[in-house]
Structure formats: structure tokens, C-alpha cells
Amino acid sequence: MYFTDRGIEELEKRRGDEEVTLAWIAEQLQGFVDSHPEFETAVERFATWLARLDDPED
Image (cartoon, rainbow, N blue to C red; front, side, top):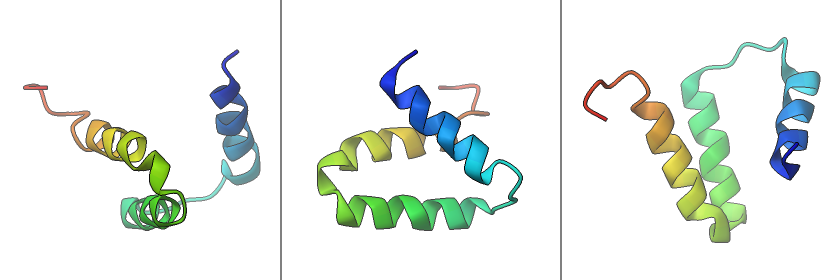
């Protein structure tokens, strides 16, 4: 198990039954980057990956 898996598992355990919008997630990601600018590149790559999941050209 990767270290990051623990955070993902905690997220699922604590908030797995909630329904949220992608706008809410985008807002949370922006807030995270504002508080932790050293993770901007990783968050940007993750957001781009999510945005393009269904794009057959990528």
C-alpha cells in the first residue's frame, strides 16, 4: 500500500456517502493549493487528468 492510499481510504471512509459537485471539488482543490502552493503542480495535473478522463484524444 502506498502512503497516499491511506489518505484516499480515509476520504472514502469519512465522506464516502456524501454527494458533491465537481464545482465543490474544484473549489476545495483551489483552497488546498492556496494553502499549500508547493503542491500546485500535482493538483493541476490531477485536475487536468480528471477533466480529460473521457477524452479519447488523450
